[in-house]
Image (cartoon, helix red, strand yellow):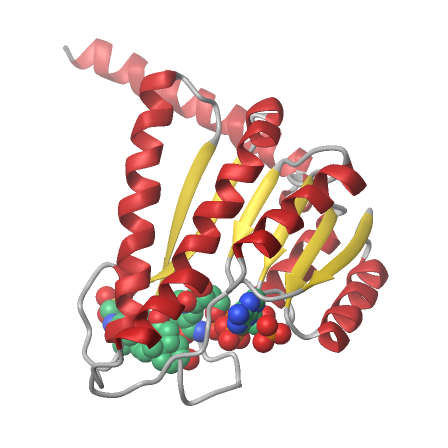
Length: 226
Ligand SMILES: NC(=O)C1=CN([C@@H]2O[C@H](COP(=O)(O)OP(=O)(O)OC[C@H]3O[C@@H](n4cnc5c(N)ncnc54)[C@H](OP(=O)(O)O)[C@@H]3O)[C@@H](O)[C@H]2O)C=CC1
Ligand SMILES: C[C@H](CCC(=O)NCCS(=O)(=O)O)[C@H]1CC[C@H]2[C@@H]3C(=O)C[C@@H]4C[C@H](O)CC[C@]4(C)[C@H]3CC[C@]12C
């Protein structure tokens, strides 16, 4: 048993060292080189920084949010940082037709899609739940339904490229923290939808990965409300 154990350990060690050498030679900065990526909510905060990381890796980037002036600046910076290409589409994710339009724009301008990064989030409040059902509905449309609409539109292209869906969520989408009731509900909904869809992809051998990012508080230097 000791002999088998030792030879197994030797084997694993040599495999790991090959893996490490390959990864180091390739370098993390090349992983998404030439890949076609949509980043939503990329005019500020985490989405903006993700766009810059993709730019440094040499990806083709399509960003979106409502504020055109900010998107223009982010696109300029992406090009300076080395993006293979960078463009924006401005509009609101309250409108499902707009969500679908962004995906169509990627198809028209990039000829396909390798990664869909769903990151945008509508404005809410940080405080006791005030009973405003209209606000919960609106936030569900922005933070959840538009994610679903974009995923459905992008799926044929992602199946073709065997690409990835990245969904930015929060600890508040896994645990019920106080003062974030509407926001938390939208993030829990994302977990239900995308975790279930991932299981279906696995059963159907659909080679599209789904990653749900569970973030804790990140100070983007910006705001006091959600
Ligand atoms: N920061 C944090 O502590 C945490 C953040 N997260 C998650 O990370 C992601 C990014 O958060 P963060 O960077 O802090 O958020 P920001 O508020 O900085 O950015 C939100 C982005 O969404 C866009 N957006 C807002 N409303 C709409 C709308 N109606 N239609 C289209 N786009 C819209 C904004 O641009 P514009 O106003 O121009 O439309 C902006 O680009 C979110 O999913 C959030 O839930 C998770 C845990 C913690
Ligand atoms: C307070 C939550 C994080 C708790 C935490 O990180 N505990 C430590 C665990 S560990 O010791 O094991 O590491 C925050 C998690 C998510 C935050 C909320 C969020 O998702 C978005 C908003 C961002 C905004 O800038 C402030 C308000 C938020 C609602 C924010 C509030 C704090 C969290 C719930």
